[in-house]
Image (cartoon, rainbow, N blue to C red; front, side, top):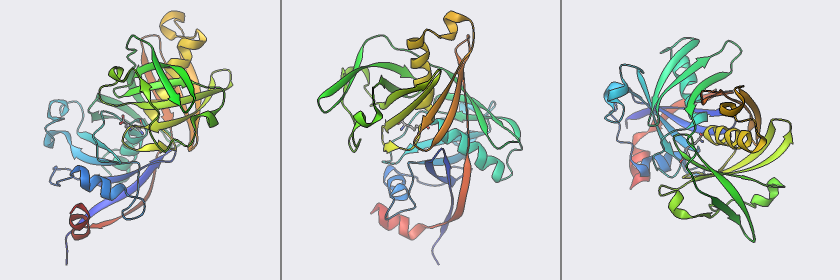
Length: 289
Ligand SMILES: N[C@@H](CCC[C@H](N)C(=O)O)C(=O)O
């Protein structure tokens, strides 16, 4: 009988992930293996993989081991590595609780963007301290077909271009990545958000994610959108001295984002484990070729 690899499936506002627990970092999770797992027809299906590794066992996380026992080794659906995933970190925390590694309450998780603090609430929602946004200087432009928009360059550990549009349909089918210029502003690629207003401090968005295509939600994207909206609306907490809270509606659900005067951003939303099972290691080896 062939070896089995444990997995779970989870999502946060329908941004869905294959969760692969591998505490000692024993698996060879190549880009091709990640892409095979995320394949929605021939694999399990997901926007990305949450590879769950003890920080002490991963070369990229060893230095964070004293602060955070677990490292979220996040991979996009095409197998590429990303610095951070906001929905992913909530689902990662939910998995740790589900597996009995942590209890309800506060915990820390190591990511490539640094250590993140997480609160697992009794009501089921998960709040993540997402750190502060960086706002690189310079104009960027997002285009779809004949239309183009000025966009805000926001870095949440990973890169975003946020464009306010009149209608979310103007983003088109998002089958391919919308061009962002100048390309030099994003040497490692970019996640692109299209945003419309729904009411005071209430917006809706669609996203094209680097390495995954259009997804039903993006946590770092929602944070980038809230930061851009606060600058546009004159509610920048660093200027007003008052926290700014935005409700962000996504195709897959709702996230609530608060930015504080010191720049720290908190994101609250759901995180759900939907299934668990075993991957046939022979199948994975064949799929990788
Ligand atoms: N869906 C995620 C972001 C995942 C990484 C992104 N595609 C990138 O390459 O930066 C989120 O919820 O933040």
